[in-house]
Length: 94
Image (cartoon, rainbow, N blue to C red; front, side, top):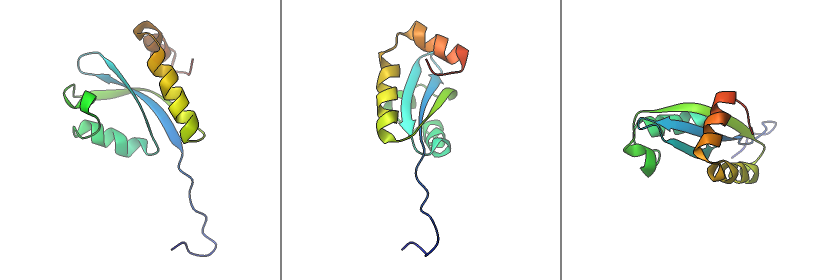
């Protein structure tokens, strides 16, 4: 139960890109990036990354809500590998 006078913290969403051991790129979303990165590192994050450990965070973007995060994730997944690498190199959203 929420205590009086205490605001409930809104989840902040994040879209992220990982570089896997084999050089491939994995895109995902989360509302707790640190926890999600720990899951990936432990091999419990995603089936795709499980066999491609270790992974390294190479890009992240904030999203205002889940819907925006899902739309941005879909947009990043539609990019070609060359476009994704340019995004990572630029260090900013395309």
